[in-house]
Image (cartoon, rainbow, N blue to C red; front, side):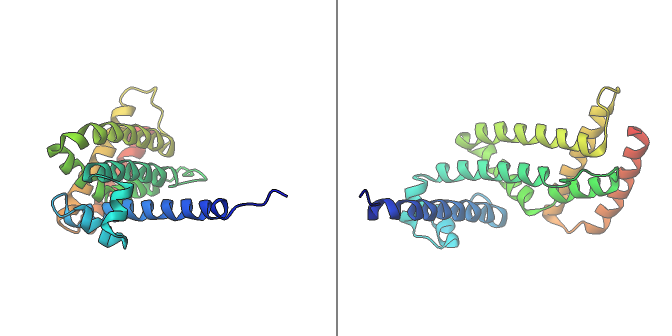
Length: 202
């Protein structure tokens, strides 16, 4: 009888453990960047935050650039996933809810981490190309989803620019939120943009 060897039995759980460790390291890298910026985000700091040894971290990511390049990809994918998950059943024509949800994405922790990645990439050649490429992809996907959720007809002149202007504004609110809690002002801006989009897109 062909039994299953101990090594084969152990392989899947070991792969699962390895995947879980990698995931913890990426989440820790993103959290470190969001809290401490590029300078304070070393492999040692990330490993400590993830609860793994520096050696285990370097097994998965031999260099700091490897770790943070993977973190860039992780943040991009998480942001895309969060955007796709906003209104799984559709927005039912509620533009204010769509505006608020998209603004919330731009003022949340994933976008904060992305901003730190942008700053790091502006000074790190190895990160810049990857960040630029992934940001372009996330931007295209966010725009496409925003058009769909807002019920915008891009065949009409100016519609594409209107949606892009709204997303640029939301990104600006995310930047402002880095320094101060802009919740009260943001609520007024959301109300105004929802009204503008209703006038412009209908």
